[in-house]
Image (cartoon, rainbow, N blue to C red; front, side, top):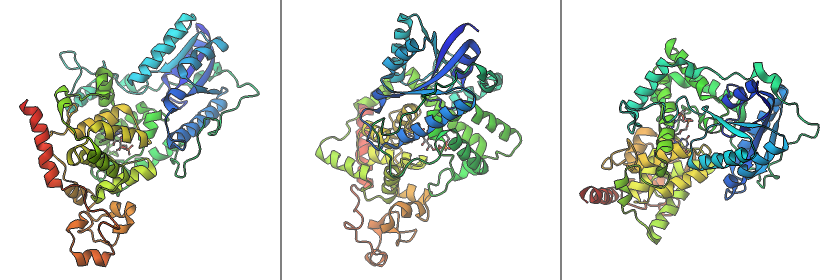
Length: 482
Ligand SMILES: Cc1cc2nc3c(=O)[nH]c(=O)nc-3n(C[C@H](O)[C@H](O)[C@H](O)COP(=O)(O)OP(=O)(O)OC[C@H]3O[C@@H](n4cnc5c(N)ncnc54)[C@H](O)[C@@H]3O)c2cc1C
């Protein structure tokens, strides 16, 4: 034990179990205090009823309560982390600040600024791998470079895990909790109003560690069928754990260890390896972002920065229709309404709506990426950017540019009887499973019987898919030919 006082700076790791930074701080310090900062640099510009802030506050409250139960507490501050952390370290005379590493460019810059300020005052910032099983330089090609194709990356990732099973060993905290500093008598946490926010009318269910546990327990029952059911948005087939992985209310090591057990004993069925692949996609995109931070604003494949996306008032009107779920394509519109009303969108629908914006409406993927960033509860820069660049065909291992989703075919395939569409577009509920995917093709008597007047109850399509497809092929071919 070498340190007197240490701070553990919680960020995207709002849990007490299996926590690398907390583990290391407890082992090396006599007195450990936790801190979370509602960072005004991040909160600025969010709508006042942003659901994620409430989720964060609820999760932070639970974190404080769990630290209390272990004998400690959490200081919660509101301000610029780059100023708050060095000032708090000075106030508490903490020699070191412990944190888990974050790989987003803005977070890296923030951590560097905090580290410089701490160092100037004779203190230190120590960071640890926690958010991923393997970081950006741990799974490399034989030539020693980063992968840009997923399948060989996943194979190398799995091989490394087989060689290094200790990568899943939990970072224990409870046995070392004696080092936690007890709370002062006047310890209080801020309210949502103190942070300048108001409650959302449709808050995110299941916040915090207990929320993550509940979702994991439910998903455990569905895991074996995940490989098949995950593609159908009307089914409750996926885990809904993305926001918990985003904010670290549960440990990814624990999830992978659970999968390994269920693969080994057979109870994970064909679903378990497929779900494991999804967790590896998450790390793949984090690796891509860490190794190629330019992807935040540029195409992964530089040549595609020359794509001439549509701009101007017509493009703006189409973008607005897409955002509002008024494109006239029911699956696209239902998906956009799901996003607006709940902050969640099913993965298949993220692919369909992103493809629709870029390939049917000819609009730059960056506009859609920013809209998702504003609206998604689970917004995570690496996966969002990766998903958008995949759909726009500008990314690594992306959908080839000449393969263009047909929104009607996607609808028939993945929402065959229109159950998902009906949930968000009740005005179309009277249409049969056959007619609901493309109401403009339905016979007038069918529409009349269903009580649907196109252009009044529901929009006519804003573009013709076949025409849009030809325009997109030409748009991309122009790049290839230059
Ligand atoms: C255009 C687009 C944008 C996206 N934006 C985000 C985002 O901002 N944040 C986000 O977490 N995911 C994003 N994804 C990936 C994926 O859609 C979500 O992770 C998934 O829908 C979340 O639901 P779930 O937790 O039930 O997933 P499950 O199907 O249960 O998957 C388990 C976990 O694996 C990870 N995962 C699953 N699919 C992917 C994927 N394709 N890429 C990376 N990780 C994946 C997530 O952490 C997810 O929680 C995006 C995908 C696309 C196509």
